[in-house]
Image (cartoon, rainbow, N blue to C red):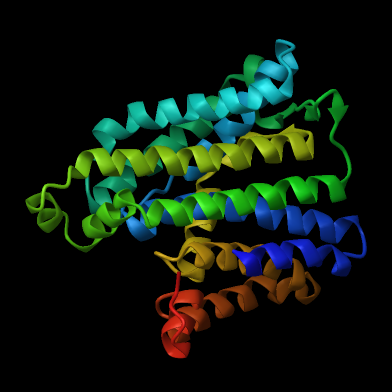
Length: 303
């Protein structure tokens, strides 16, 4: 945590213009989603291919009341996250009874439904073209400027990592790791698998909603593309790339896979080829992901 806080505090010294600030903000927002998603995939062993839907709902849930009904954004944002958590609870109760590929298909279907609804309900969401989002204001002061948003998103990332680390070291976290190892064995020991899986599903959805709401207010615009299947896949790849069952692995995965495409733009036609080669090489030489593999090789753990 101290190392992450130091990086966040010192990084502005290397950010020479607003473009680099924008990339750093995007990294922080993606990392928040990945930290929550890693709790679900890496620790509880439950796959989700629809988390981009929760991300988009967090953004739209904050944008619609504040843009169309005059709600103050500081009130619309937490209400949006709470409603996304409630939706995750309602959907998760039947969905999380499934396992493996069937669970992946169910979450994929959920993400597709959310994407279709956001695209077709144009009177509410603006349709495929999206909608404008009012600026976030706190204590009567409108938040503007990349440097200000950088500190907000950096603080949100630190808080997310701290909460996730405390969760996995709690009895709930130990129950989640037990479920990942063997659900039957965990239930034999008295662990209520349905309750714990639902709990972590809701928590991960709220993490995604928070990042989505912050993204919407930062960008000032949101479109249904945020709920696309490819966005969900990108988030899962970040988790796997950095290392499942590793909170800091999720952060590293978000950092690398958010900044790498920006660095490869100079390659033009070969950009995606090199990007794919990097992913393949990482999975070959770092089979458990970057942080857990390096942790085992260097002997300092992979949390």
